[in-house]
Image 1: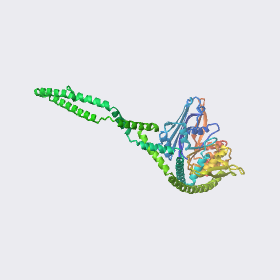
Image 2: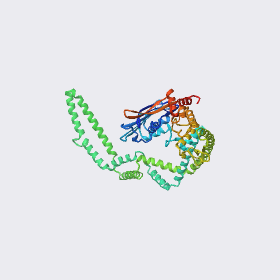
Image 3: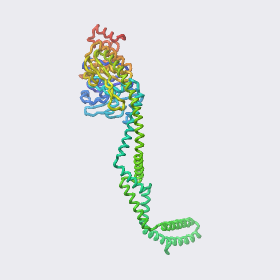
Image 4: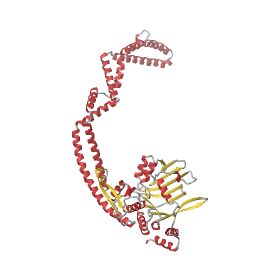
Length: 554
């Protein structure tokens, strides 16, 4: 089973103060007298699956209501992907825990695996877990997309479908490439691109050039002053009579005299010698630097013009130096593609023709497979409908061609239904009666039992206004579905309840002046008594009839 509801915990919802329901796979029936609160089970499921909450549902006297549902999943990859994208704890050991809390103050919180989330994400995750069938419930089979998925699953042509989708996406990509080339060819910016590239290639900016130029320009434009300053430094170092180096020589003479008397001053002598060497090296460096300084007005003008050119290009294109180089490559690429566009268009055209032929071939296979599947499925569902009281009903899976190929093929799928002989077939979503549509759903679900993608089916009194024989057939169908899916049926019909593998009874009692709803599993004699009550009374004949219904032979 794709998903199984393992437990449902309800606190302070309507008449329920506290309810803990442990479930298993298979078919479970929920019964009880009118007004006991059977519908609260469905209401709680809706809330925990993301339906909007109404604070009037909170039990009188309570501050908040909570519903918690624990599911086990066979496959968690897709669910974990959705949860991971939202930063929600993924499923551990295949367990998915949903929780909903809302208060009288209007506060509304929802959690998945202990992580708080939005109502939208809760609903997105919940939609794939449960199919609720009753008035105004979300019924996945009414969706044309879901109907198509079911037909495809039943047909077992997943490999063809994947090939079709891959080819279809390839065609879309090729068409976009062709359109882009055609638009570029007609683009009025073509001349502008050529002019911009010519301008940039003429300027030929180099990586790091502007920064280097600005440094050189700064030095060259201040060369006269730098020559003056370096001359003054050299004069103070060695040119003047009282220059630094001459004074150092005098100091050296005094230090040597001291050292002859006191050898402990040798370190001072060495320090002086080192200082003198450093100053002499500095002098040589300044001389070398001064010799490189030139006053060349023409070179200065060339540098100034170059700086202005590079800066103006950056301002014009709103790009820095590396951005100008990237723009050159972009423009070259665009123009090269345009120069070869005829060749590229021809190549794309050939690929388009080839992929179109492939798409037609695969799409034709899909259409044939779907058509054959639709016919056989329609017959199968028709048989199940007759078992469920629609002796004169008609059901058809119609294949309608699309004007243009779509992502899933050349056609759409529509389930059509007519309840009575002579009535026109209508789309299933247009059937008005909830009881009617629920029985149709049961027939469809039975036919699709192995391929259905949703693990829990909840039927809310779909057996209303049917006779005993039809109710017996409904119970048999649900029991059959319970072999591959988890089924919960809220029912008034003893024939349906008797078919269940587990039977739960909802009761209402007054305690300490408050009405409380309780849910208990009934088995053995208790189950016989509950079935007898549903048959009309706890008489001997009713009990015998109940035992007969519960007999494995019935």
